[in-house]
Image (cartoon, rainbow, N blue to C red):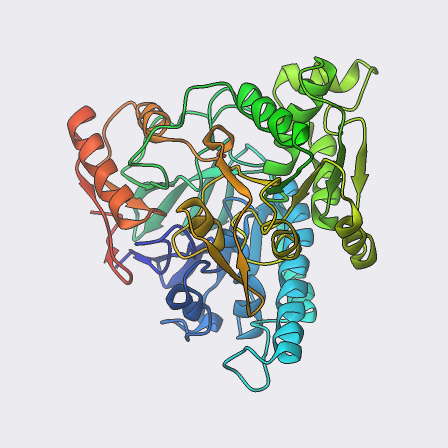
Length: 465
């Protein structure tokens, strides 16, 4: 019997894993890391309910760690099949997986030094060597053309508009002469973004698995240019520093694009701007390389020869730890962009520890902050941040600018689902916190009249009935 089982991204926005079975073969759609609260992160250490060696193939919707970050572990634990991804996703994973492993090794060393880990000795979930081994399993597939993995599984990707290379996957499942189609939305992006193409409509599916990250809300309609300009000018006037936790893939590039436009239009002063993320620097180069994902407006600006739209006038790309530490010495107004976007690890934690205690400074939260993350704590008005085993007073101004989210909001998700010419037999809402998923369930039932369910961990269904 054909079967799809939810192994992650249910009741949470991380850990995407969907097991598809047919004809005695197993295909895993996405292989993400759980992030956020301790009880979620612990799932990364738990044994999978299936033997990794029994999985034949893995196919990826996009490169974000909550969709790919478990790959080094699953390969280490016995998976030996091919990992299918388009070229942009493959190249991003080369950066992201190595960086994820490096951060875990670094955090384990730091925990051992400070003595705040529950493990003795502190261990990383996986190593850089494990990440490199996982990367040998990758097989590149067409960006927008269909391809067959096996007689049981054929895949047709569509542009998801979320990050470079992001796709929604229409998978045709065949068993005993019977076929059905299931669409995995991946992460659906925004419409009318400055850089990326819009999410592409998909005509048909028997079943749809759709993310619901922002299923309970709509993004602000105000201009992100106005919001950023107002904060930058206010903080610069009082002599403060602006810290922006920014995902290295997508968010950093969009922010740099907008900051450059504001500078060129003389709406903000030309401030020292540090991109303190070696990965973000490398990712920016990939955005320039993979132009098939760009909007035409961006291509025209990119090729007019007048300027680099992804760098402000006073950009400093910092790669080494020593360069990163020197940013602490900057006392004049500046902007610091660093990963991670939800403040869950990496260099951003050091900058927050340095800048949060000063009321002149500001932190701009420019994306979704999952429950249990430091970003969510700051957003909720927390006054003492726990960073690297220390309590850090929060006196800096905390501002949220939701217009930068790379996830579709409630209206945009309905718009994407409305692209199907006929209702599917069932819509499953995943990749959302419980309140968001349930709220979006009501929205879809009311506006589209579809059958909708919100699955739990381990639930399964037959896609051929």
